[in-house]
Every structure is written in C-alpha cells, then in structure tokens.
Image 1 (cartoon, each protein chain N blue to C red):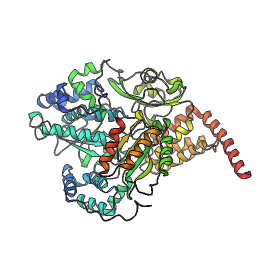
Image 2: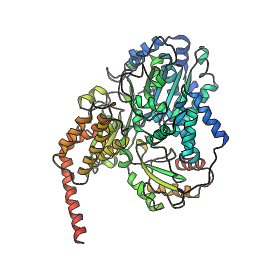
Image 3: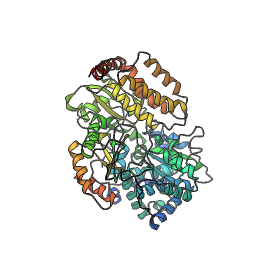
Image 4: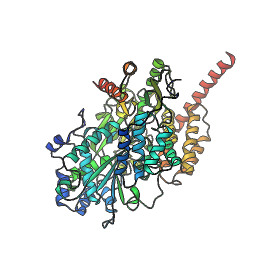
Length: 429
Length: 183
C-alpha cells in the first residue's frame, strides 16, 4: 500500500527543506499561490470529503467555507498541535520527522481561507517538535517562500510558532484560542464560533496537524484519488496509533475503516507476551473501553458510533489480562479530574466526584448503589457545560459500567476481603 | 532542603530582555506574547519568581493578578525552584501499562525522593505527569520537555548516574544525556 503521510517517519532527524523540495514538496503550495483561487482550493478539499483528524471529524472544506469571503482586516488559520489525548502520538511524528509536510498544508489552508498569518499552537512539552518546526520555518523564510511575497505571488504569508504551557483542555479549539491570546485556557461559549470571532477577535479556522498534512496530497492527486481510500463517508488514510500491551507499538498509516483487529494483531504484532486481551480503547482515553469481541469493528467514525463510542483520534490502547478495568478507569478518572479547567461546576465537581467513586471500587469499597450514582453524575454534567469535557470523562466511566459492570463489583469485593485481612492483621498484630 | 532556599539575586541579561520585547511584535495584541515570555523566563531562571511575572505583565500590558491567574492555570509553570534536573515521569495509561510505576520506584531507590520531593543537594526533583504523547514509546520521562523513552530501570540508573556528574550548562547536559541514551 502506498502511504502519503508517514513516508519519512523512519528518519532519525527531520527532513530538511532542500531534501523536501527534491521530493517535489511545495509544488502544490506554489501552484495554489500563483494560479488558483481560494474557492478552487476549498472546493477540491470539500469534494475530497476530508474530515478533521483532531477527533471531531467535521468536514474541513465546509469549516473553511464558513470563513468570510469579503474581509475588512485580518483573519487567521490556527493550527491545533496541542496533542494530548492519552493514546495519541501521531501529530508528533509528523512534526518531528516531516515538518514541511505540515507547513505546506498550512500554507495551502491559509490561502484557502484568505489568511496571511497562521498561528501554530504546539503543546509546551513537544519541545523537540517545536525545534524541528522552528528550523523548518526559518528555512522557508530564508528561501523567500514565507515572507512578503510567497512564491512571488505578491501575497504575504507568515507562520508564527507558539508554545503552550501544559493543559489538556487547550486541545478544545476555543480554549486554545484563549491560550493563544495569553489567557487561561478556558473554553468559550459558542456561538460565536471561531469563523466569526476567533483569535484576537478575528475570523479564524482552527485545524488539526494531521488534517492539514493531508491537504498537499489532495491538491496534487485530486479529490477522486482521495476518495478511492477509506470509507465513503470518511475517505483517506489515518495515522492510527497502537499502544499499551502490544508487541510493536507505533503509528500505522492505513485506510479509514481498517479493523481494530488488523491494527492490533497484524501491524502491532498482537498482545505483548502472548497474553489475552482484557479490553481495548479505540481512539484515545475519552472513547472508553470495548471488550475484545468488538475487535472486528472497522475504525471509522460511523462504525464506532454504532458501537456506542467514537473514533476520536484513532489511538488504540490495548489493556491485557492481568490489568483490572477498575485500575485503568482510575488512571483516566484521575487524569480528567486533573485536567478539567474548572469554570463549569458540573464538570469540575463531576470529574472529581466520579474519580472518588471509582476510587471506592478500586479500594474494595464499591457499593451497589454507586453505579446509579455514577450514571447520575454523568447525566448531570453532560450537555450542561460550555464544552464537551464531561462527555470525555464519561467515555471510560460509562463504558466500564456498560461492558465490565460485574467485573467492577467482583474486583471490589475481592479487594474488600484483602483489606479486611490486612486491617485484621494490623489490629491483632 | 537546599535548592528551595534563598538563591543569590539573579539579574535578567539584557539579551533576554530584548528577546522578550521582540516576542510581542508577533501578535496583533501584545498579550498574545504572555505565554512565550513566561516560557522564556522560566527557561532562564528554572521557575517563575514574582519579579518575572511582574515583568511579563509590564511587557504585555496585563495586570499582575491576571498574570498570576494565568501562571496558576498551566501545569508547566513552577513558582518554586525544582531540582536542577526536574524529572517528570508519565503516569498515564500506556506508560503505566508498560511499567511507569517501576520507573518511579527506581528513582526513589536511587535518589531517595518520592514524587513532589527534591534531593538534598538540589540536583534532582521528581514528579508524576500526565500524558506526554509518548504512548508508543513508553515508559517515558521528561526533563524540561526533553524526552527519555522506552525506559527500563537500568536505563534510568544510567541516566541518573550521568546527570549526577553533569555540571555546566543545564540544557546542554540534558541534550547530551538524550543523545547518549538514543545512541
């Protein structure tokens, strides 16, 4: 199978501009800047059916078409490189190994929405990727590709690299915009949507790294080619992550709709040490747990929706036998409790409270009525806040109850016996 | 515990101040440069002192209380000195499945510090952090955002031994350790 996203991933150091140009890079950006109109670019991407790879799967061309056509003043493209969903490490590969793939996509995307400035917001911890991008942007500036007249088109284009400072919530696009503006990374009420009121109060489109990395290939080979890959509703390849207990964890570029089984068993070499699988997570922490009998599910947004979950970022995490679901669920509840921004009470309280309740099961103190309590916490916070964070923390919680309820009760009961024994020893010893 | 005591006053070099001023030009509103300025100041001092927050506020036109509310929001900002080499061990799902607890235990055995603590000589501090995006290469530990991946207890011991001897420029020492570990 021919790949178009991950060709450089085996490299040790990032691909430099001269090497990239020798491979034909920036020819599409040049063609776009010197001979196409923004409408033509938007139409090509719309026709290709490209959807956002950050987890929401919104059609990219349609998002771009929300941007105003007549502008008084600046508009911006903002790139969401705040990759932080546990189980997700794909954007990092692009930026560390092949920064020019992203930067060409950024140039084309900016042109499509008539933006002359792009802000690339990268999470603070991705310092190595930041350095690779800083070098690549300096190369483009020195070559005159970025600057006052991109490709001699007379059109200015600049890319500002911006480091965050550690906050999962900044992956939410309006939290990211606040953070870019030097504020606390708290999501904004919507509407107004970013296309109307985005970065610094100007019309803005926020796009994920991998999404933009798809764009040069679409311009080069056309929408029809793109639609030969993946599913009818979600065309193209995806950089699937496979991590946890597998023989060969990594990032695998495959068509959307590839089954989780093929990814885990064929590409990632199966469960580590020949163990059995207890559960898998299809697309990052917030997509929750699925039992191994669902491994044949095709990894695309529609198929996973039918399973009651989401494709998310496509980062599969394998939980082996020997690890209890309650302990894995606690890793997530602690994470979400730590990462809630705290501005909406249902989320701030709900994430902490549900962590406490899961903690009871973990420590052998789970009660039968705690299941109803967890359901109540989820019901009381979902769709009652500014952003979808409660939906995220409900992912692992709800799926643990749905698929592993008896196991939660069992483990809690076992640990209650263990506790009693220890306490007994302490009392009498 | 040394390292958290009163250090000698550090004066910001003119060169860095010029860098900070230049950052504000990249944004349509000066406030956009607040995080980049705070990042640079923390890189220089190792943490953010009140004087750093005040300066960041002056350069961006943000009130001191507002700067403080921003600093407290983001996990990477430190208001107290950490160790010279602050170790951040990822505790999230993929690293945990692959043995992050063993990594923390190894650091504890070697240095006698638990998460949240700093060694008496101020050289190392330890904390547990959330997902670093190293899920395919865990367990992972970061030192000032430089990653050490696919760790084993032996690799951790070798890393600590190397950094115990590393004097001179801190960032250079971290990068050298990273190069050696990857070689």
